[in-house]
Amino acid sequence: MAVRLDELAVPVIGAPMAGGATTPELVAAVNAAGGLGFLAAGYRSAAATAEQVALTRKLTDRPFGVNLFVPAEPGDPAAVAAYRERLRPEAERHGVVLPEAIGPDRDDWDAKIAVLLAGPVAVVSYTFGLPAADEARALRAAGVLQVGTVTTPEEARRAEAAGMDALCVQGPEAGGHRATHGVADRPGEVPLLDLLPAVRAVTGLPLVAAGGLADGASVAAALRAGAVAVQVGTALLRAEEAGTSAAHRAALTEFESTAVTRAFTGRPARGLRNAFIDRYGPYAPAAYPEVHHLTQPLRAAAAGRGDTGAMHLWAGTGHRAARGGPAAGIVARLWEEARAAGR
Image (cartoon, rainbow, N blue to C red):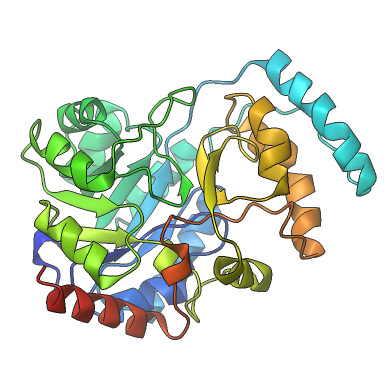
């Protein structure tokens, strides 16, 4: 089913939050509110992605999207080894064994592309870079609308040249991973409302705004700044259909501030500022997904004991405005507030 991002009944897109927060039920709920739901294929195998797509199709007859993580070049093994040694006392304190060898990981990219060509969804978006020209051409021929996630005007230029149909413009306020195309890239600090016109100056593609949009006023401001739709993630983390853990849900209302860190994955990501970020953030190398795999046992152990001082608690700057309840109601309220604010 074809979809146009500038013709959504409600111009709100559910962010594809990898790691379990986004569920097929959440996608269907966003769709039910008139928006566009997105599955997160990052960290999932191609087979698991296909299962999620199939389940989502059972829950909604409306178009939805799938987000892919573009694989990166391997990180510096020496830097990863040095970080492992720094983390080792933490691991020993909690009875955790850190992986000594981390092999290449392309996030099952080729197989996921094959899955999406065999059973195309309405929209595919890309984070951390762009597909190869032949991959983009094949998906376009299959009728898939493709969205490149960008954080700078230069990334926007590259995305348009790569044949993207639309751009998701991610501001620094966004929770979770910054979508910089290079692992070692320093994430920009231009606020979303200034970044949107800067990207608009270099491309005529439809723009989706993302980053810190957790209430109607911010949604309205992003639409006035030139976006055809907004993408919200943190605003949905407390929704009934989200896969967010109980500890993470509580932390969203308890923690005061967020920080951008490489401590957990090796890529810059915004989360609730906690002791782990403060202790290890300054030493984490720009190596992804190696650091992600290195810290996975630590993060799993912290989650198991509900230790919010050591968990990765992705959240945007608007996290205190996140609300509970059914996701369809959250989306509807955001849109009602945005209209009242003069979108």
